Image 1 (cartoon, rainbow, N blue to C red):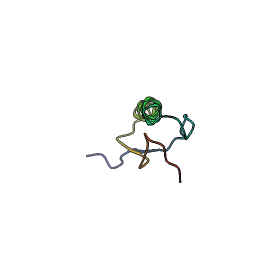
Image 2 (cartoon, helix red, strand yellow; image 1 turned 90 degrees about the vertical axis):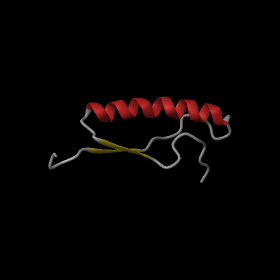
Image 3 (cartoon, one colour; image 1 turned 180 degrees about the vertical axis):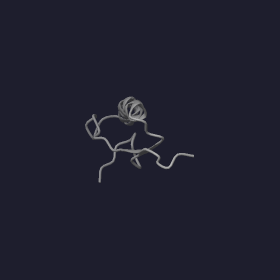
Image 4 (cartoon, rainbow, N blue to C red; image 1 turned 60 degrees about the vertical axis):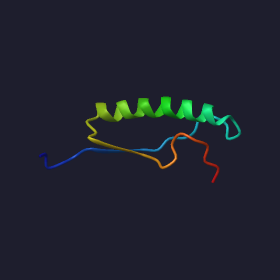
Length: 60
């Protein structure tokens, strides 16, 4: 087992206006996060954490 494990924390802004349809939020966020996950993997990430609500409108 390695002494060090690379961890990636991903937090991204939403690309859809807050009043857009939920399905549009989900689709755009999933596409964006898949790209970010592959980028983290390319940088040797072994564990990848996403923000709590990453694929839906979050109005707080």
